[in-house]
Image (tube, rainbow, N blue to C red):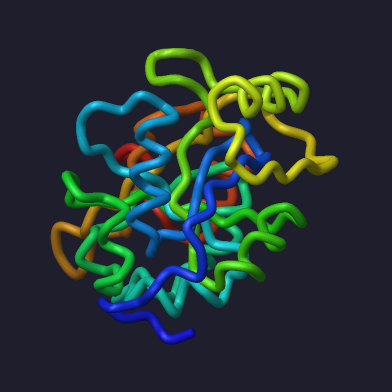
Length: 213
């Protein structure tokens, strides 16, 4: 499917699924009905940004128009480390901008897990995603609690279980900083941690400046 501003949703389903960190609540980014349903389930009263979850690394190139020199980085490797990367919203194709209605950045995740790929096969577009919990409460980290949440608050949601080892904490959030000049190293800021030592080493091996180092 080719991205465009007038894409019709494959469905208006809302899904509950495991990510690599906590349980998530999401839907096809093209479904206005599903976005409104998620806001109702979570009791969201004001517009808020969602993360975009991709099931296949090649979809990053389809939905994100990343300019050089950022385009040369190994984004699947970075995103596979329990991270959310905040990309400028202007890099997104038009249809994906709805994920961040009130922000100039959008969080992007890549989740190569079977439950997420099953949803992608149904929807054929990235998912908008948020943590599975009521607004102000802690994210859910085990399947039994996720099933109880569904039964109580979202009986119409499609539940996708899976044998995934969750980290039990929200993902690390990294934000892009444009270089000050052509001689500056590309930089990422850690907005929410922890930044695990193996991930920090991978990022620095790509020539990235982390938090001004």
